[in-house]
Image 1 (cartoon, rainbow, N blue to C red):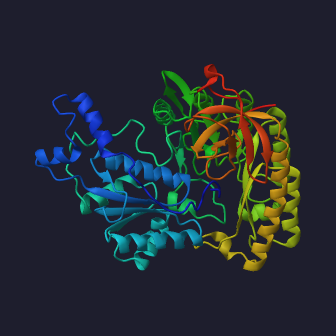
Image 2: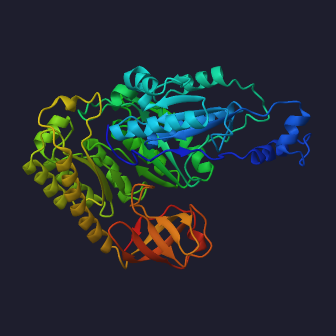
Image 3: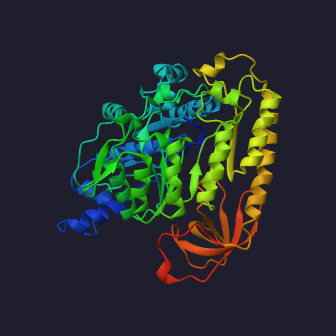
Length: 503
């Protein structure tokens, strides 16, 4: 397991994901016996029906938890439940929790408490629910109706059925093939496996999510196709250990579109690359076979972007963490990757203040950072999360020293990032529109994953829509973001698969 992406994204209350009117428009379109003027409310009244039960939803944690939330929401809609935009309007609230580090536990418990105070009927799921068989939640909030662990769709739905039964209605149980998504319409996360076979000493995720279980490759590709057909322009591939995809099934051969495809990262990346949208890989351990994916990036089949959680650089610390590879091997691999694909963006995460980390070992990490010249970096101080075996190690680092090392680490990386982004000024690149404001457009390049990396601010971009691809010239930079102006658009190129950068 790695720390990466948005581990503590904060909670969001899911707002109206499918408006009832939009749903009924599709019903009327295919059912002429219904009057187009009949409103949803009037339909229920005229049919003598009760309004659908409404479920509020709070989703916490990383993108893997987000996918769990999407699956639950999809099932809720499939069974005719509506999604409430507020605690007050909901008949019941589901809270999907995070329990990876202590601050996440506190945030999750606070969110549960708020839902109980505002609504009173709460079902808890997610990683925190797996800790001590749910006792952590039950001791803090004994009023909750039910507690489950992560990746527990059947258990969550069973609890909802018990406390908020909803009769099936074929006219309201309509969902799109790609399911319910919590992300903007133009990008989506695709989880290719669950669990992890590693036993990193700082991590408790395997104890909550179990060992690696890879999804059949035809299911992954079918989901990806549905998303692309629904207008998604970028797929972010996630798991606990993306590079281990297929290990548990010995890279079994599956079938997609009548063709045999091995359940393995390289073949999956190649198949995804044929869909004509941005494909971005996250949580990739630096195994040797990952090298085979880099040529696909150089050829433009997938984005030249790799999220590799190195975690540290000192051999002794890596050994105590039970992490694969070594600093020397990783530096050699980085050099090799850049030789194959010069435009590759490398993101990583690190932990400082691991038990027993000396000043000299921390300096080794800084030296690695300087030599590796990574593009995007996140840094966490070691958190003694309950159940982690590293807690049993001696010589724990005082919190003040951990924070001081993190500050030094990020100061050095900020200067590296500033220099690397400054080198892009004057170049042109293709970016994807994320958001429009009154004064500018917020976009991302191939080097920018949503929420965790920088953005590209584009001036004078005209009438655009999120998900559109445009060519820009970089006019400025700072430590994290780029600033650009839009170039004249060639309509024939819009919607195609872009090159990441054009020098």
